[in-house]
Length: 101
Image (cartoon, rainbow, N blue to C red; front, side, top):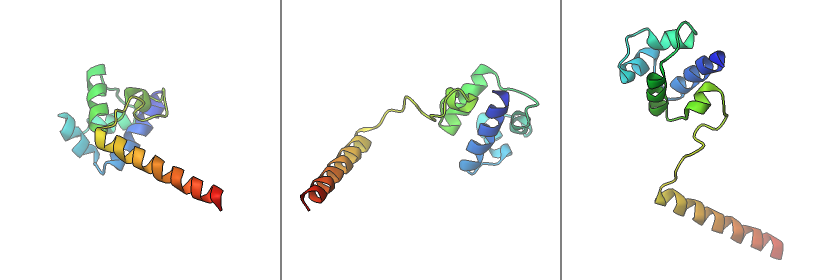
């Protein structure tokens, strides 16, 4: 699991377009802390793990390798729900039109 944490941390950091130093600065770390996590020389405390997950916008289960779902408990806002509903209705209309052909 240790290896997966280091790998996912690196992947997530790069996805956000952050250097190790930039991510460390966002977390209030020194310049080598993230490098130490990514090379498995060190592990974050529970408190730091939570902060890392908040900054990278993923669950602890994901970054630790327990789950492959980045945010299993994500809550959609009203606008996102409306967009999903509208898309579902659009797809239903398309399906009906194809069935009538």
